Image (cartoon, rainbow, N blue to C red; front, top):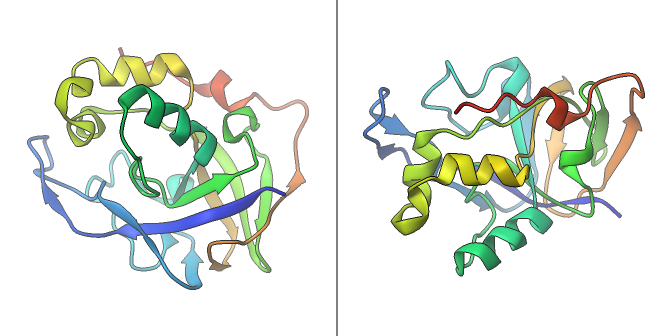
Length: 183
């Protein structure tokens, strides 16, 4: 059964050498149900709203299965929130979704897949160490990007909530068909 493993929100804003000067990539799992509205999880923040957030990027989902791949590659634990995701999922191939695909999560939240994540240098700096060099290309090449989601129906979400695909448009492009390599 596909489900939410963790719901993550910003833990703290951190200084960053990018153009914004700060980053909200430090996301951590929270306990209990949290409200989700058109701009995402309440109590979450996006420091760079030009490239993150807004109604078409209200939520970012990343699969535990993909995180486990990167744990093996990077030889370290990557807890929920490490990828800057709001939803750590399990049991659903988030990279095999279609643009326009809709999910019901829990009792009331309904979301729609809009586009894949485009990794950036802030993300590379967050990964740090030797992995930082070439991280954007490496992450992109693996095509384990995860989708951004638009909120169609506000609701609450918590760890353990079931994810049900309620609409999958067969004629829509796949998530990874929409990916434009930033390199």
